[in-house]
Length: 244
Image (cartoon, rainbow, N blue to C red; front, side, top):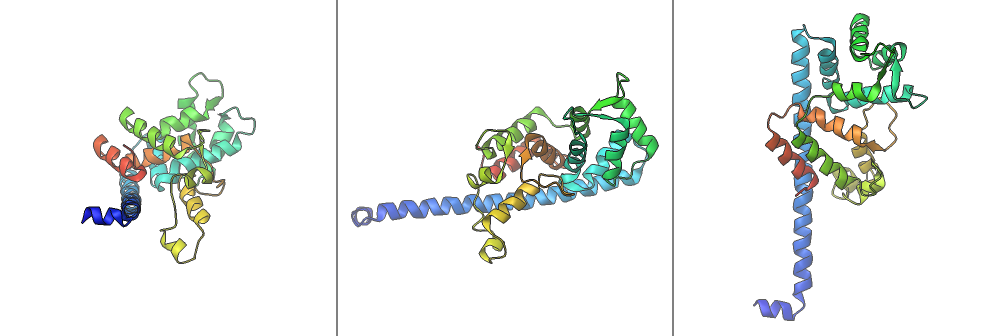
């Protein structure tokens, strides 16, 4: 029977069918992984809100919890506001800029808590703090194993290797043609992929369709906060990005 099929030219057709099935399974896994991450983000928000309700925490812990209560975009939103204020590209903020940035986020932090935050990071008393170091300490701590997995995912997405994930990079990794909004004609493939990029960008405007490695790590640092096991975090990332 097998010889008959191959003699009739069925081998290429079978190969195409198998390839289609493999691609469908991968897309199904990725879609399920996205749903799983969304549930984990909800868990993170609830955990942060519960933490805030207890009160009695230091300013940095409170600010972190406030950011996490906004979901995976919370820390990136703060980072984008700070970067927009950094006109000279120095990646440093004085107390006035830092205070203004915190208040622009709408996070409920008192003036005294902002002053305490600034003083704790201005260790040398220079009157300015390093914005990158501040955001690094603000995001939830992660093991090296988790950071390595995030790095693998970013490297796979960043096809051009320029340190930024763009729409063109995504087109080389994902297709949105199976997305319900593409099938219904509600959105184009580019629009769907752009929406995916915006998940990492922090919201509140400034959506330029370019995801830096810092934004990518901050996003998954937030997701990571609701996962206790390194093994499970690795499993989720491998499913989402088809990593080996």
